[in-house]
Amino acid sequence: DGGITQSPKYLFRKEGQNVTLSCEQNLNHDAMYWYRQDPGQGLRLIYYSQIVNDFQKGDIAEGYSVSREKKESFPLTVTSAQKNPTAFYLCASSIGPNSNQPQHFGDGTRLSIL
Amino acid sequence: SQQGEEDPQALSIQEGENATMNCSYKTSINNLQWYRQNSGRGLVHLILIRSNEREKHSGRLRVTLDTSKKSSSLLITASRAADTASYFCATVIIIQGAQKLVFGQGTRLTINP
Image (cartoon, each protein chain N blue to C red):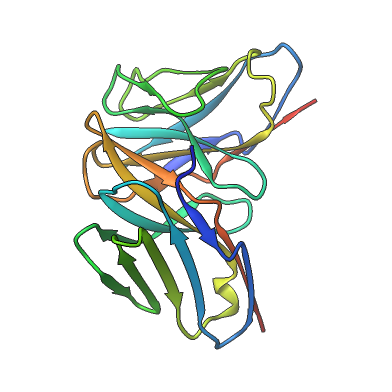
């Protein structure tokens, strides 16, 4: 079955620590996205990538970093510079960056502070 | 910044009734999409309506779009307990060749058996 796999499902971060969230897709999609969701809120865009080896900042990129070395993978690192990292993180992909096609979402990673 | 405003924030109805959720937005859009999110899960795409369309149907779902009022509505007919979830509208804009979704805060729908 094609889809998006996010891991881990739950993650705990100690103060001053960087953590990396994994996102893998086997849909052969070019575009991938990372969103942050706070309780009772909608999604806010952190970073997005239209093609391999290219990515752009979204609306709330400060304190986060990404890489796109492979088409299938778009990992997100939450750095120690992100002072309020507790949230639900969602990864998504779409066929192409400029298309009237929906985004497909993974099941998320819930990040908490120890 | 979040463009969409959804109304109501929460809706509780009896099974079998219809549920209507509304979404307003601020800027010109390429298309508008509705998504569903079960608690603790990712979003699932429901329906996409293009800016030149006024109404679209998919099973028990009906979406309307009024670009002059910058608003959209999602109607779920003959609701079922399994429809209990949060529903989000997302406006789609194209910036520098990239598709960007801007989400509203969502409507939390509860269907009472």
